[in-house]
Image 1 (cartoon, rainbow, N blue to C red):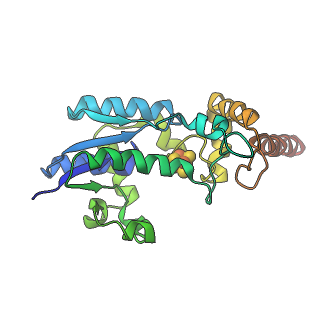
Image 2: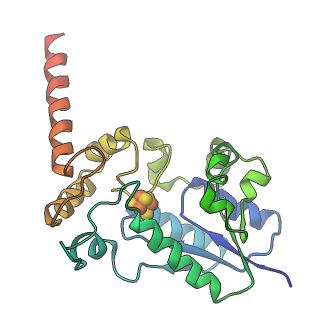
Length: 238
Ligand code: SF4
């Protein structure tokens, strides 16, 4: 029996290119699934709407059972409230995402999930957890499409994410602690309202398990403010 191809769409350049290329190649698509973490850049949500409008495909929008803010800040646990910020060893957020997409896919058996890993990030495909799952397909790797090629392809078709990819090389949840430090600096400077949202969430965490190598986002904010001050005086002294 033919498997239902479910496209996993994060909305970023790679999964967008994946969807558009599959359509261009006439690949059968059962459905396109977008998991809205609630921590998306507003520009990304606009992009999803645009993609839906232009392709004419109804994008299935999934959400966590309870909001990420609830899991992080409110959820009653034995010794505290909330899981605190995600970290490499506390990726409760990706577990939620994985479960929601799997739950959806299991309602449409037999299925194969198409994931937009690019050819130059094939190491993600070789991770143990991914290797153990057989019903995954990585068309961009099959077609040798790199991240740069994916971005160019999307741009040529008029997708610009309102400039998000002029700022970032990769786009994920705006407050992801697993992103690069340089990207967090950019967030603070170029998207101050989102940075403020991070600070507000940080203040509400009961026992903060830390954000990257910092105890809190507020500590990181102080570091960035210090850097700005030093740069200001450096420029004055020149
Ligand atoms: S991008 Fe970061 S915060 Fe968002 S789901 Fe993935 S690991 Fe979690």
